[in-house]
Picture 1: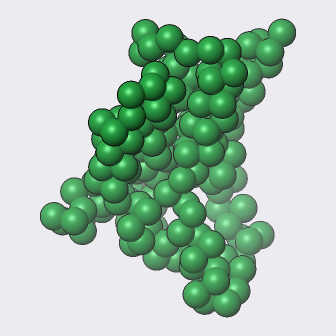
Picture 2: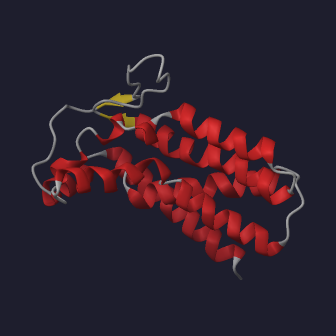
Length: 175
C-alpha cells in the first residue's frame, strides 16, 4: 500500500476508536485525534526518510528493505501506545495511547495484504514476514515502473476504495 491508503486506513481506525470507545472528548479533541490518527496510519513509513537519507537518493530502490527497520515492528507501536495509555490520566491521552497502537497497526495490516516480504508480526522473536497475497520479489527500477506495477495490482484498487470511503466520511462529517 502507498501513502494515501495508509493515511485513509489510519483515519478510519481513529474514527472507529473515537466513535466507539465511549470516552468523552470535546469536538476539538476529536478533530485533533482524527488528524493524528491519519498521520499515525503512515507512522511505520517514517523509516523511508532514513532510507533516503542513508542511501543519499530518492530513487525507488531506496525503498527496498525499509520494512526491516524498527518502525515496522508491531511490538514497538503496542508498547508506545500502552506507555502513553498507562501514564496519562486525561481522556485525550487515553485515546491517543490507543491510536498510537492501532493506527500504525492499520498500516502494518495493509502491508500484510500484498507484499514480497510481508510484515514480521512476531519481531523481535521471529523475522518471518507474513503476507496474505505474496507478490513476486522483483522490485521496480524506477517510480514510473512502481506506479505501473501498482496499477496491475487488484489490491491497489482496494486502497483507492479505502481512500474514497475516508474522503466521503470526512466530507459528510464536515457538513
